Length: 217
Ligand code: XMP
Image (cartoon, rainbow, N blue to C red; front, side, top):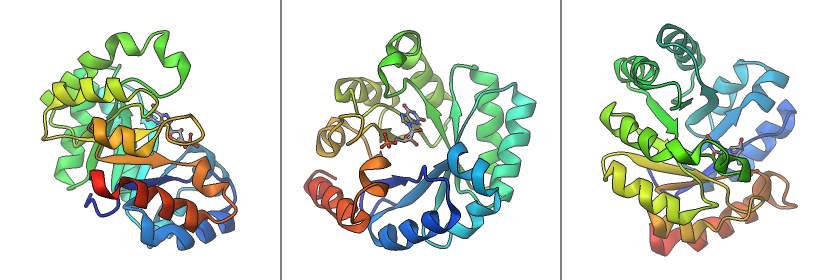
């Protein structure tokens, strides 16, 4: 994924026309569009190819299965036109390696969830987040997902993974994180949903974030 703006739109709307209209408006400000279960379950897998006209698509299916099933899932998602898939890391090295192997064969990307951005991630996930980051680096994944709500954790994860892997970071805006703070902490991209797609003017909201991050990219 090429970094021009540092912004990824999380498009968690459930209406096809709204999804297309918002994508059209913000396309000039985003490097990718992340879609997940809310949009795909309501509209279907063909939404992926429809939106890929506007930007590369990251499929946030948080894939968390045995190696063979991970491979089968990623195969279908890439076939549908996605450029990247988000997988969970807690399932362990073999599940991750199966996804990464397939992605490399198809010149696609795998991003691995380390610890999530919401408060409940402190219950279990944070304790294994650093181990997952190391595993992602060992497996040569394209990058990890790390929380914009905790820039200090993003900085820790950056130290672990080095500069070969990217960090994509959700939690800006509606969840309280700051785009410029998390970029300064070491993230390559911020992932922003509600602050853009619920804004009166989504393009203006996206532009504001891009302007805020510009000097720190
Ligand atoms: P908002 O509306 O809060 O949307 O800007 C954030 C988007 O990112 C997803 N999300 C995460 N995905 N690890 C992930 O892989 C995380 O820690 C995480 N936190 C939020 C969320 O589903 C939404 O699409």
